[in-house]
Image (cartoon, rainbow, N blue to C red; front, side, top):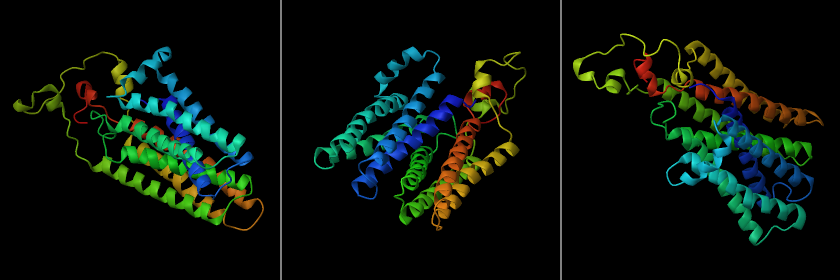
Length: 315
């Protein structure tokens, strides 16, 4: 598939925003991070900014952005519609919770229910985003059990890195935060490694014989290409990245997305005034770069079955 930069930015930025929102609210309820003051204002502001920027960027991928509202009407059958509904719905409890913590300085009763609703809505939004791709059977690399869980875990991992950075900026960091980030990054790295191994080893069940319905007569091959020049399907669905380049990009995604953030997060345990803050900042910047590479590769390695009609022998 041809990587769409607007969707790459959307899934990366919004995922980090929802992840930050989950941890900010959860740890706030548990009393592990402040529930009032500039920490909460900046924390909610950053989460909402990332989510909103991602959602706005996603509209750039639409041919007719002014008709985007129609996507909300198909929530019964479409994961894309469900994602849109959940993305908008999350603003309600999260916005009310932010106002309650920052202006009213209230934490109990109805505010606790708003906190729970914010966490659930954010997690469901991450899950529905992953299911948009996991539900597409024509794309073997996406129609995998790990696709949606990885979207959720990567969003939570990047959100944890951002929360740790905020803690160091405001001087409220604790040792548990670094170990928590490392643990989540390790889980995300393990899931991504299993996912890559799966798509490399899984059998290609879609063939040109099945696509044409001529498999009963034997091996099928193209006599002539269907078009003399690339068309829309060939440009969008037929994008390919070389195996050598894919392996190199996987290494870079692993390095910047997981290895460097883990090392940088562990460096925040070292004594000093600026070393922990620099380590947290490096972890956040490195993971952002690693996730952009990982997400680009997620799209670039996807093989659509429509290319069976344009020369591919299997997908």
